[in-house]
Amino acid sequence: MLRLLLGVVLASVGFAQDQELLAVRRVFVEQLNGGDSAYQIRDLIISAIQNSKLFALTENKDRADAIMRGSAGDTVFDDTFQSSEGITARAGVGSVSGAGTSSKSSSKLPGVSVGQNESTRIVERKHEAIATVRLINKDGDVIWSTTQESPGAKFRGASADVAEKVTRQLAADLEKARKSFALK
Picture 1 (cartoon, helix red, strand yellow):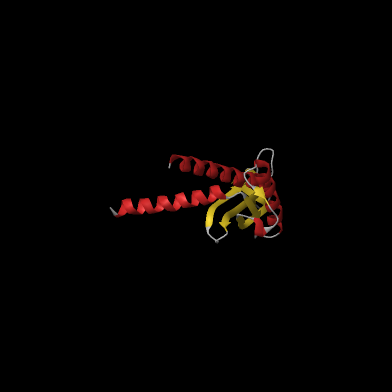
Picture 2 (cartoon, one colour):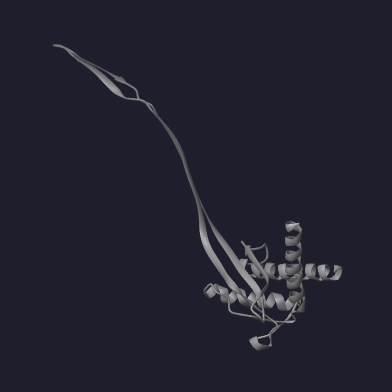
């Protein structure tokens, strides 16, 4: 019974968030935390939302139905892989000499040495971006959130790809909310 009641409560909370998300028409995107790269990711998210036509975007916070907040970062780094293998074999070299009253004799023993060494060093330049954003209604309640990350796409950099992923997730969640609202 308690499980059923908890399920009903959670479903009604989800339904309320879906209703609030569906009511959003105009969004203000705040500056994202995370340094200089966050400025660029914010602009890319604005562009992606604008192109998707999900919401009207505004630069006037007071006119917005919801505010998008969060943080983002873009990192470029070198990933290094290094390995070394080797084989070495050695033999000794020596000499034997004899001294007598009338003659000297000496013998030399040959030496053998074999060695092989192989080293590999690979340095790969990597580029990763991450964004964690949420939509906040006028009451300050979170009505939607997502975290997206990207190592970059085939024809798009990591920052542009993460902005597209945020927008695709928002569009998918809006569609899901529309369907669940239509069923009720």
